[in-house]
Amino acid sequence: MKQDLVEQQLFTKEDFTETPLPKGEYDNCNFRNCNFAESDLSEIRFSDCNFAGCDLSNVIVTKSSFQETSFKECKMLGFRFDSCNQLGMTVRFENCLLDHASFYQVKLNHTVFLNTTLREVDFTEADLRNTVLDQCDLLNATFDHTNMERANLSTALNYSLDPENNRIRGAKFSQPSVVGLLNKYQIEIL
Image 1 (spheres, rainbow, N blue to C red):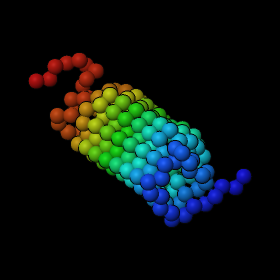
Image 2 (tube, helix red, strand yellow):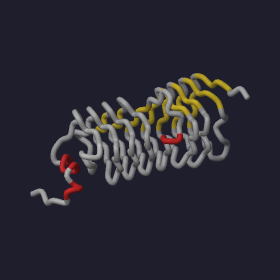
Image 3 (cartoon, helix red, strand yellow):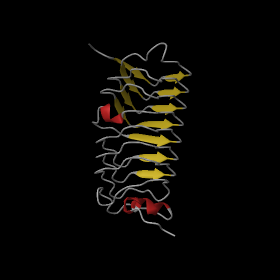
């Protein structure tokens, strides 16, 4: 079945929980203040799209594609990036709430997270090479066999990760948050 192609559309204050977003390909579209909470966005392709002020909490995104897509001031609780189509995934986040999201085994090379809350996010086996986590809250985020080479966490807060269990060569950290690299040793730093 052929999916529709939607180009250069502006969607404002739409409630897609009542009327679902039609399956298809969305190219260069803008979604502003839309409600997608708990909607099924499976197998939808978003390319060069912008989401601003949207609620994308607990959406179903099985085999969805996000290429050159940005999220600004969006609520994305429980977002499962690990169930998306990974091919060509390029995303950017600014002032978003991404708590409880999953990036399990997701390739996020060069991704930018600006002033974003990432509490209890799963980065297990994710590829975060060259990623910027600027002013991000990573309280209880999971880093396990995560590739963080050359990632910039110099302004990130509340992270705790095991340098022996993650690849951190060339990553940038700053004081006092860098003590999050020592948490596993249960030592007291004065």
